[in-house]
Length: 325
Ligand SMILES: C[S+](C)CC[C@H](N)C(=O)O
Ligand SMILES: N[C@@H](CCS)C(=O)O
Ligand SMILES: [Zn+2]
Image (cartoon, rainbow, N blue to C red):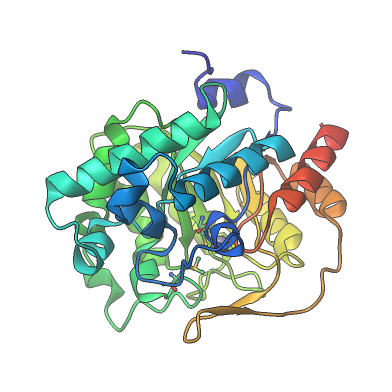
């Protein structure tokens, strides 16, 4: 393999910080693809013409996005499979059977790998359970979150990604609820056989969207002791407010000083879940240069951007990562 296994790269090079790509869904939207739909950024892959017509406009757009993130300095990039759970796909697209679903995922991973080449790392992105009902920014999983069968929901996507050697890492993103966090961390190597990370969706005030503190998050992890899945490789925050993100990451670092962390905040805008638009929030108080330095000081090993961040943001992150490592 051209690439060192990601875990080995991070362990052998304690100072190495990888630059991640930016908010792909919103970047596709900037380029003309309407992602405000039940499968979000998976939408271009649903139409047959994407696969049958080499010159399809959407194909060029997705390729162009990957290309621009690569040129900006991204070394690790994500598949646009945030809302590609079997439930979301089978209930909202013509793709109904498990075999059609597996074919879709395999094609997306193949296409993404072709776009980024063999030297870069590829993450199989998995959004939270709450994404299918747009609850990733509230963490409100209803009156009885203990009874949600998270494994049943994630299993088809996990089984597919576990087996795909073109993926280096599985990324559970924007996890807003402690029951979901506990469920993912309870799965052993027979369920999660590839290195994986968990990106938490954290409120501006520094607690998980459901109110769980970072100390409680740390307790969940420490409580697992030796039972923790050895594939659990990084923990971090994503799609959190740009301005608050350095403090949030530092609180996670204080609670779990030995854990490799990752951070990819959004632009600071806030998603209106009804209208499916982004609303302005407070202006950026800091530059990427400042927040990247703070992330690195707090143990970040992967740094990038989430929703509404673009290749320009990744360029600035890349420059700052080079400066501070
Ligand atoms: C990361 S959010 C902006 C993705 C979209 C959301 N889950 C929705 O369904 O509208
Ligand atoms: N990685 C996802 C969003 C997570 S909030 C995307 O870019 O669409
Ligand atoms: Zn996001």
